[in-house]
Image (cartoon, rainbow, N blue to C red; front, side, top):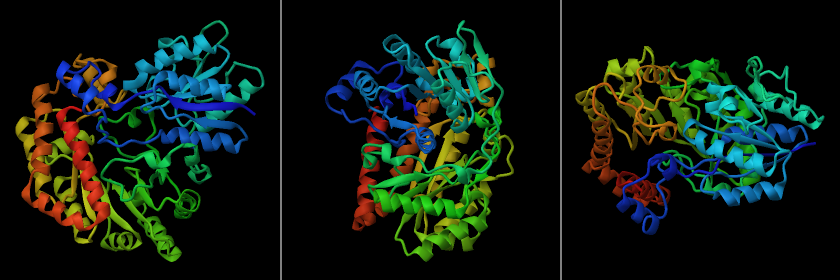
Length: 492
C-alpha cells in the first residue's frame, strides 16, 4: 500500500489578506506587538483532505495530514522528509495558487520521484491549465477526489505514471504533454463516505470554526451533504456543474456525532452546509433531532441556514435537541441586490426578515452574513443593508466585500471587462481586488469598517453582551470575538 501525505502550501491570514504588503508602521506593529493575527474568519483544517484521508485509509493506504496554516515552509518540508510519502496531494485555492506553484517546484527539485497531485477549488475550475502553468506538477484532480485519487494511487503503485482513462483528472505524460480525461460522475450515495479523519489533526482543539458558530473549546464542523442547488453569481459551483446536492441520512450524521464524542470527546458541533439537511429536508432534520433527544446526549450545535420557509415545529425540535444559534446568509437589505447576488432567486428581503424573527422567537440566537459591493449596488443601498442588519435581532454579523470566486459568473464578467486591480494572491474575502460598479474601492472598504462599527457599537447590543457575562461560555466567546474583530479592523 502507498504512503500518502495530504496538505496545502503553508500560509497565514496576513499573507493572503495583505498580499501586496502593509504600510511600514503596521508591518512593524504586527511583527513586534500584535504578533497573534486575527482569524476572524475561523481557523480550520482542509476538510476535503480529511475526507480523502479517511477514504484512502479505508483502502489500506498509510496517510498523513500536515497542517499548512502557520507552518513555516522549512518545517513543512521536514514533515515530508520524515514521513517519506510516495504521493503528495495538495489542496489549493486561487489566492494560494502562487505559493503552491513555488512549493511544487521545491518538491520536484528535492524529491523528483514522488508523485505530486493537486486538487481543490482552483483546480476544479482551471483543470488541466494548472499543469500548463506549473511544469513541476504531475497530476490534477477536478471534481470529487475520492474515487479519482484512489485510481491514480493504484496506477502509481503498479509502477505506472500513465493515468489515461482515469476520469476526473489531468496528467502529464512521459513526453511532457498535458492530457485531460473526462469528467467523473458525482458520488451518488454520500452515506458511503467515511467520516473525515479528525484523528490525523495533531491538536484538534486548536481548530476553531468561524467565531460565530462555536460554544465550547472542543468543537468540530459537520457536513450533512455535498453540492448546492443555488446559483449565486460569485460562486464557482454553477460553473463546474456541481449544483446537484446529495444529503446524508440522519442516521449517518448522528453516527458521526456519536463517534466525535466517544473517540475525541467533542460535544459541540457546527453544521456547516449552506444547503444541507436543515435547509432542504425538514422530515430528515426532525428525525436527526429525534435521534439526538432519544440518545440523551447533551450536545450543543449550530446550523448554517439558507432557507426561510422552515416551520416553527422544526425550530422547536432543534432548540430542544441542543441548537443554540443559526447562522443565516442574508446578503442584502435591498431586493434588487439580493436578486442580483443570487442570480434571480425568489428570495425577498421580507422573506429573510420574517425567517430571522421566527428563529429569534423560538429562543435560538441568530447570526448573519452580508455582502457589500454587489454589482450595481450604490453607496446609499449599501447603507440600507447596514441599517437592515442593525434592525434585526442578530447577535453577530459578518460584512464582507463581494468575493467573486475564480471561475464564477461574476469573475468571468469582471475578467472580460478588465476590472481586476490586484492579482490572484488577493482573491479572497479580505480584499476588494476589483473595481466595483456603484462606488470606489476605497468607499467599499470604508463601508465595511462602518458596518462593523455601527453594528457592534450599538448600546442595545453592548447591553446584551454585558448581560451575557453571567454565562462563562458566552463570555469567552464574546471576548474572543471582540479581540479578533478589533485586530481585524485595525489591520492586524
